[in-house]
Length: 148
Image (cartoon, rainbow, N blue to C red; front, side, top):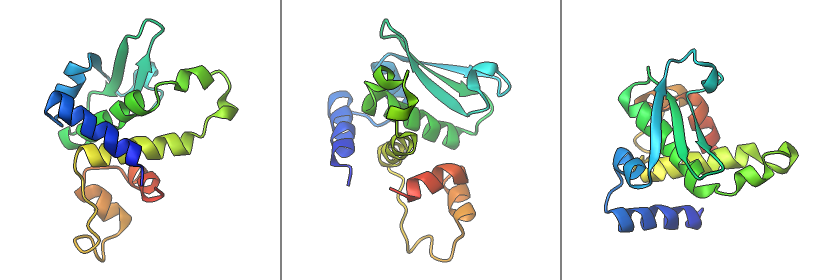
C-alpha cells in the first residue's frame, strides 16, 4: 500500500542518511516557525505548510505542543510538502481536491517516516483514545490514518 510513499521516504533516507525530522527540514531548507496557538495564521490548527510562488517553504506550528506530538505534526507537514507538490495548481478550485485522501497520505507518510508501528497485539483491548494517547497522536490523526 502506498509504495510511492515508501519510495519517497527511502529516497530521503538514502540521500540525507537520516530520518530525523529536524535534520530533514534543514536539508530541504524548509523553515519552521513556531506561533502562539491563538495566532490567526494557524486558523485553530496545530500547523500548516506553505510554499510561496518563489519556492520558499515554511511550516507554521503551534509553540505549545509536546515534543513527540510536534515531531508527528512536522512529519505530517513534510509529507504534504513532498507528496503534494502540485496541490497549489488546484487550490483555486477546491472541488478538485480530495482533502481526506491528502490528509491520509500525509499521516501515512508521518507514521512511516517516524517508524510508528501500530502492532495489533501490543494494542489489543485498547480504545482508539488510549492508542492515540500512547503514541502522542491526537485521536483525529489516528482516525484519518485508520482509514488508509
